[in-house]
Length: 358
Image (cartoon, rainbow, N blue to C red; front, top):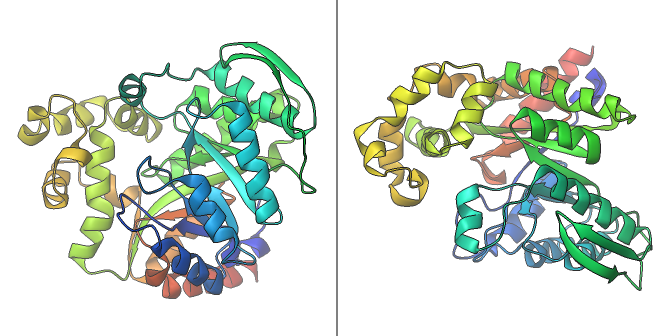
């Protein structure tokens, strides 16, 4: 758990280097340097299977930064063999001299149907984490089960660094419990209220305690979409367009609304919007323009967006981030704004923390 003194440290903050889709990934290099200069603790990399390949990006950042943690937020299970995952994690940990963190996510069922792979289960994810830990410990692993069939796998060379921590992205209670039992931390989804973060952290930490693990050592990362000091149009593009897409997705939107304890009927009314209904369940953020998503977002209940994100002046955003820390987050993954927009908010975050610590 984070103390009041630790809350004033900007290293408790991190942000995505390449949010959304990109054609040129080289922007991540200068942004990681900028994040390091700001004192941020983590440069987060979200993976897309086009021009956002995780090991390539993390490898580049490992050689252009010196202090900042480089974290995958996230990569899916199942698309890489455990030997490939193990090699990737160990190599990046060695390249960064111990600054790499491997974050996993379950992804959406429709993606697995498109990829032609079986969707991961709770057991297959737990087993994969166990296999990786055993490989990094130098064991020869023989396994047949939900995660696949691996007659005899072993890593011949082991890096002279500790294995990378492994985090699990989670929304629902079962995945939160999985994170608490088997992972080193949990990454909470964007658009949770502070109350939902508090409840989610408790579920994960209670599961850790029941598994005989120290719940205080479980890292809880709250993802908060921010728009510090942005114009109304900029803030709408950063926050509202994202929210409109997330809440439209079947399954994900339902879990977010449930975690926030918002009525099912409010979500149902949002989804019958004429434009969304015409999509017949296809992902809105892939098919609609940013402006269309923004326009649709105003059909949500008025309190949804402001209660689950952070916008306004840099000082107001900093206070919101401290509210998420007070709710049980150990650190915060900033979404919607890259390092060039964060300097004033980071300074305010530090100042607010110093005031709280006195």
